[in-house]
Image 1 (cartoon, helix red, strand yellow):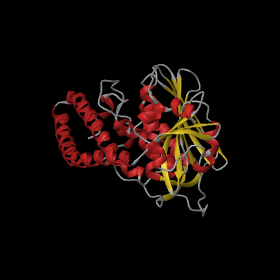
Image 2 (image 1 turned 90 degrees about the vertical axis):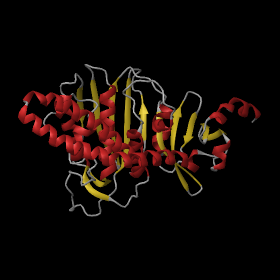
Image 3 (image 1 turned 90 degrees about the horizontal axis):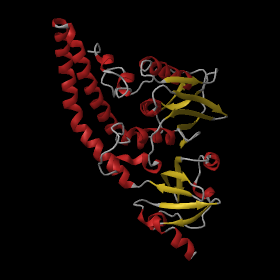
Image 4 (image 1 turned 45 degrees about the horizontal axis):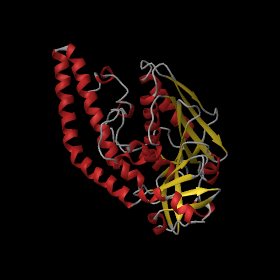
Length: 358
């Protein structure tokens, strides 16, 4: 035991509850983990109540799932190494960070909305006088859409993280994803990145939380396309295995990052880095959507240059197979009346796509 304590002293330098698992049991913890009732010797069967099979089967990368201690459910990132699995548990401080961002976004949303409305009117009048001004309009609109997406993510990340599970509706998951992939293919066809998509021929009907699911799919796609190397193919798959649906997006990239911190980038100290990196709020919404649907998120590497993001969802029975809602989600209008695809893919698209939207 003393040897273990010496070997795992680094756990105490992690600012959140953390512990290590080997051969299905906890072999070391830090003090914060013990305060939350994770103890040396506990079996994974005692605290992983969902996604145990996925946890046992993943080979590399990071898994984001839920664990249970006492009567409390915690969101947790798990990194698999050659020797053991490292569990890092989220805390109330993570929610406090998200709440601060949400309050800031609330202050920004009204003036941004006013600017966009005024700009729409101004640019439409300018276009009638000077058709060449369309290019300038596209550049302005592109910048405003980028701001709107940031503000919307700041507002909604905490909302989705704490979303009640009472707002499920019957949808055709296959049709919903097909529609989003089709939009992505059309909008990004000149980017130099191809999309390969496979899905079951038969529809997948179930109860899903519409708001969180749509945002998760859009964020998975935009992240994969943003970091993909030019002239490569993003491989997208929707698979059903019994009552579990898996949606995966795999790209070829030369990007390296610490996967253990990908879910909480909003907690980091500002630094110089790749401009494509954001606050990580999209990943927070992806993880929240998985949790709401009884699933998990897995980041792994099928090859050394490929990164694959997979979100799993439990297909909840509809109760009434004859009641099917439209695949068009009735969700809150976070895009301010604009096309949600133009908002979600704003970092990928040229200003040309934003010339005629006002």
